Length: 156
Image (cartoon, rainbow, N blue to C red; front, side, top):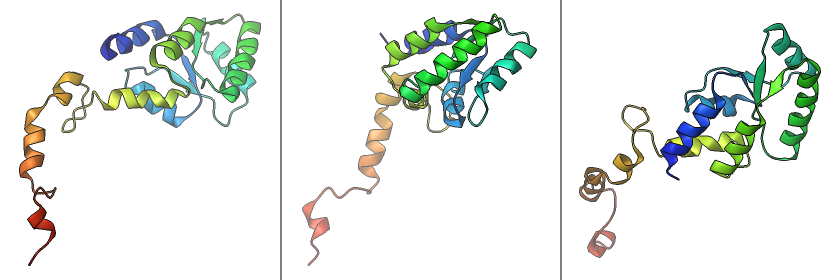
């Protein structure tokens, strides 16, 4: 499956529901995908996060904590708290994110968008434009940054 189709699939699955994440690096990685409705849980008691969601009348939420042992325990605790308030959990998005990108931490998603960003404008563009840009290759060869001849190394 192409990278752009994976990104579009995750963005559509996450939808408009609030996404619970662990920290700042996760926020940066997901914001590159166009996701804006995120709640960070680092440094906060999990019950306080559940209370905040109930006060904001959230009906459904996605929990995207890391896929390590600590992230799984936070996911299960949050799921218990949120189910007590009657808030539905979109577990499909969590499983699809893990299976489509084969990652262990949410912040690793930023490596997929690095390949798609344009160096000059910072906007996400087609990955093929970046890989097959021949002008960059030719500029490096002519740039003098690499030594191409052995005579450049040994001077007489």
